[in-house]
Length: 196
Image 1 (spheres, rainbow, N blue to C red):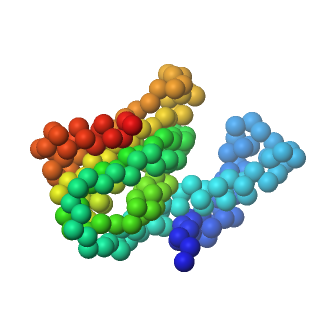
Image 2: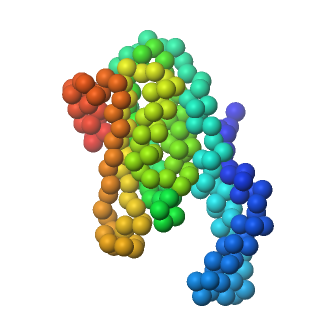
């Protein structure tokens, strides 16, 4: 069975209005929305919004809902999960990699579920700090591990292409739950493994 493909149904249900407003924005920034290169832009942007804001229609808790009983209680890491999101302050893209580690307490999730969780959380208007905490909180709530740790690396176009204009700069945020808060060796193991 193929993986569920999320799309933002509100955008689809309000297609005409969204296209109208995109057309108006084009006009208000000084463009001619009737020029050949822009004729289909409102429709293209609307279809893109269905995809890049699909996280609003995803049930993030349901994604990890199918867990397996397993006696494994050692560190599990899924690293370098690529994500794309939109900054809620400027509606500009930011993107990077997410690394997730957890120590199961008898319940594990399929590895692809973590990538789907990242998609569901990041495909909304977001801030990197919230993405980091939300992913850790969902894993903690749904899998009840001994501990989990999430590290998010991001490059923000609102900082690279405008404002201070510092391309190549990265923001790193982390969320630490359970055993990782008190066990420095577990934290160090996770951090060293995601660097490899």
